[in-house]
Structure formats: structure tokens, C-alpha cells
Image (cartoon, one colour):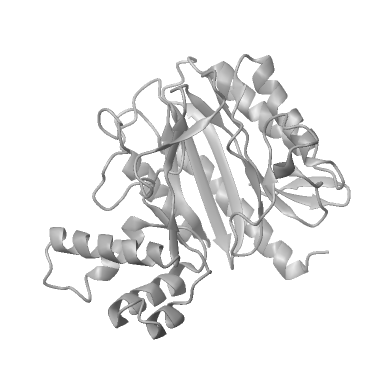
Length: 337
């Protein structure tokens, strides 16, 4: 049984996350930039009693996940044109909120301009999420949840994405060990052993594609998402004592840890930290110093980073997501108004 104080944090984070997602959806229109919408989403979260559990992300058409803008507003690799919404774009917005580390994580898909070019895919993605949630009763094997999630997309002529999963949530842990399948993985799949557990919280987020592969690929460099996370595996204090970090590098690592703990953060949030120690440095010099710092922190396993994800065969991607608490009687959706 979760404590009342913890339950309140989970519920409050879910409420703010849902309100932020719906408010952000209303801001998207042809001609608006991705960056404007991302920053507006994060402002909404902060103004309504939460903090971002991860940077707001936008994925358009064949892009699936993990892209947020950097401070230089560089587009994802191989993205043609400007990062501006156009009529007919199939857009995924993913917003996470935490309150004292308790996370509300939700996403939706929509078409800019409502041209109905993607209405069947959007409907199937939403129904896939809802079908998975209906299966979330204590003791249900995960492979049955995956099969339920897959069926609406298959019935509508789309492929469920097999190498992206939902995930368990714990305080200060966005991906807390258990992976939730979104396809018919079968009872023998070792990656999805076990059952739905009472008093656990899960992010349920099936993806589908108009492509044939049902697979996601990495796009660009290992840090193409512009998102980083402190692993918790290495102490900056020990790295300093072992001379793996110089004093300034250790101080910056400490600042990152104090600000973000083990939750993902954006490059554009952290980059301004270099202004104080290097007040006379120009943009090129600061960028070089940032790259060197990140490279070092990744090499000692203090930081990890993420690729942008896209459809392997360039199909359009759909996604819906809720955060769900498992009670004795079944699922309770937390990401609601």
C-alpha cells in the first residue's frame, strides 16, 4: 500500500502533466516553431506547481521520440527544412512532470490542421493504449498486455512498434526496471517476464507505424536528442578523488546532480552553467568546453545520453501514453485533469 503522501504526489504530478499536454496541444498551429511549443510546455509545468521530469519532446512524422531542442536550435540529423509545424504533420508531444520525484508521463498524437490524412492511425494508437490499460489488473502476465496493445493497430492496418516499450515509474526513476510490451511478444520472451503488480505505477505508451518493419532506429550521434541523464552509478566526489575529474569539472557535475538528480535534462537547461566560470568566452569557446565536459562525464559513466528515434523504414509514427497506478481492483489513470 502506497502512503497517502506518496499517493498525493503521484496524483498531483499526473494532473499537471495532463493539463500541460492538453494546453500544449492547443498551441500547435501551422507556422509555429517546435522550440516555441517546447518552451511553452515547460513553462506551463513550472507555473502550475510541477517541474519537468524530462525535457518536453516533439516528434514529427517518421520521428518517434527523444527530440528536444538544444540552445543553438539545431535540427535532428537528416531533417529537411525548418523546425516549423506544417499542415498535415503527424505530431507526437511527450510531457513529463515530477513533484518531489513522483512522475506523471503522458503523450498524444495529432495532425496539424486536422486534414484527416492520419485519422485512422491516430485512432488506432489511442485504442492501443486504452486496450493495454484495460488489461492492467494485478497478476496479468505482461505478454497478454502486449498482445492487447498490438491488436487495435493491426486491425487498422498498422504495425505495432516492437522495440519501444512502456516502463515502470518510481520516485526519481523514469525507467524503473520493468518494461511493458506493446506487441504480441509471447509467454516465452525473456524480456517481458512477470506480471502486473499492485501498488506499482507504469507508463503505458504503445507506438504504431505506417511502415512495414515495426521497428525503430537510432538517428544521428549518441547525443542527438540533446537530452542527458545522471546515471547514479558514479560519484563526482570519487571521480574527483581519483583525479578522473578536475575541480571545475567536479563542480559542474555537482551542480547537475543538485539540479536534476537522476531525471533527464536538456542541454539547453544546463549549457548556461558555463557562463559563470567562463564569463569572457565566446559561443564557440563555450560550446567546445561543453562538448569536452560532456565527453568526460560520459566516459566515466557519470552521464548517459540518448539518440533521437525514428521509424526504421520511414513510416509515420503514432503514440499515446498515460501513467497508471495499479490498485487491487485494477488500473487507475493518473494523467487526467
